[in-house]
Amino acid sequence: MTPVRRSAALASLALLATACSVLDTTDDAPPTTISDAAAPTSTTTPVLPAAAAPTATTMPTTTVPLGPPRALVTPTGVVVPVRGGGPGAWIVGTPCHGEATVADGGPIHGVTVLIDPGHGGDDEPGAVGAGGLQEADLNLDVAWRLSAALAERGIDSLLSRPADYRIAVIARAELATVIQPEVFVSVHHNGGETVPREAPGVEVFHQSTSDGSRRLGGLVFEELMAAFEPLEADWVGGPLHGVSYRLNRDDEDLYGVLRRPVGVDTVLTEAMYLTNPSEEDLLDDPAVLDLEAEALATAIERFLTTDDPGTGFIDPTTFRGDLGSGGGTVGCEDPPLE
Image (cartoon, rainbow, N blue to C red; front, side):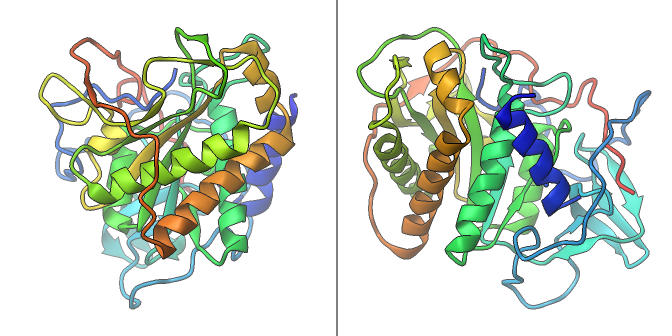
């Protein structure tokens, strides 16, 4: 087990028990429609770490007047949006965008930062490095480190996927829309065709219609580049190095995790190229993951406390091809909720 995989597993047990861009090709489904959700079917049940009592790190401070919770942390540690019901019989959305009833859970009334570790589960590992490091594990590890770094700054946070299970993009977006955090950041690491570069090939994507998302993206890019540039590596990158938005054939945001959340400033980060062996070696070092998490935390803190505009902006692009089926609900199996 690599240090990344080991630390991700330990973090999950201790704290909640909490290729690469998020793709979503189910464009015919509305962003967070509840009535259209069908109950999921499952033949096997993913196993989650045992739940531990919520702590200040994992249970965000309430930021709105108490009332019915917007979301719950179930007894198995899964974060789910509340759709209705009440104590003893909460109706919730599931990670596969189905619907279920749970008796109880830790209430979430609001949170400042929602952290979204991209991919997850056995069938959606994301990019995979030549040494076997899987992006889903790496994203989760960085997400927990980011949560800890934000807590040190007095900023509360919550993970959309606190353990290794699959969660559909539409379910991630529903959670963000229901909770309404001030910041929603989807953590990823890149893969694909590249060319050699003299500096890190960081990519950050923001929402095409949100000035706040654009500013957040510029700050994230600025801090990630500052953190990575002193490191020694055979850097690579692609044509989208910088901060931008990408549109689909309908002139909407290409990535579902940016397109679907309603009223939430959201960015998607691609910190390094996991498929580059030199960068994979860096990403297998916990100290480098701490650097990444601290950079993200600093960017978020600046977004919340300053008017800094950020840097690194490049021209937007339009993608009219087929992204595949990643991030959808077909074949998705929900983890146990109780």
